[in-house]
Image 1 (cartoon, rainbow, N blue to C red):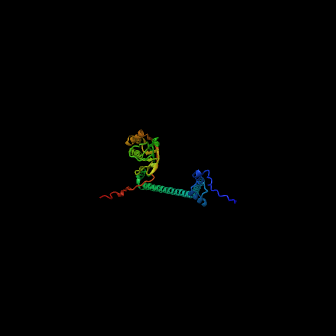
Image 2: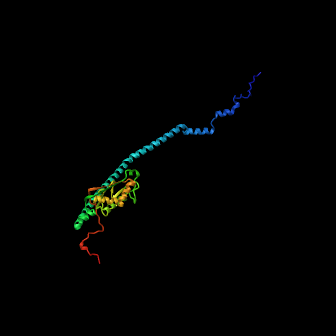
Image 3: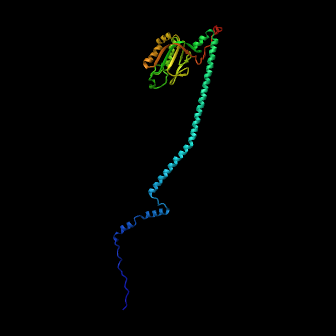
Length: 300
């Protein structure tokens, strides 16, 4: 009896233990989407996937620091380069200012010498052509120095005038802050002339019939020369009579009102002997010497 080969088993294969969890298993085994996986593979192939995010941030910060250091270094280098040039230009400007100042001082000294020479020649001509009255005319016109008794009037700002602020000295009325104004000195001088003064000087500046007392900003000018307080006014004449006449005049009352109202410091004293210099320049524009031979000329 022949032996027959055993037949194949037709029984189905056994089921997986996790057959009921195929969906969950697929999610666990394929956590990354296929599209993302392909993109990651391409970046890896291109060599762009090996830099962590924190490392990239550090590299960017370092690059900013390097850039800032470069800018500061370039600025410092530029400053070192331009500093000598600026210093040289500044020194050249200082030298030019000093040179121009020296030139201006030299010209001013030259003008003073010429003015003194002109004044001397004018005084000599006045004495030469004035006849017997030439010396008297020269004295009264301020062309020559004078000496004699007289009155000394000192006018000064109030003690606290510096605290009251500055401001120009031009005014048409009373001082309003304890400072002596040009108008004040004009009235003092005019009052002394009216009281009988024969010659007047303010702080060594001789006055003439053409003298002007003005103000420029913070200074009082006499014939365009600035004066500083206290203002010492010397008037040649009979001291006692001159003082009494001045105190009784309207200008003397004006000076007293300045003292009482605004504390401007004043003093009046009789002097036995005073020396007044000649006027720095005597300019006559219209007047001409009178000669007896001219009598009758120009008349009909």
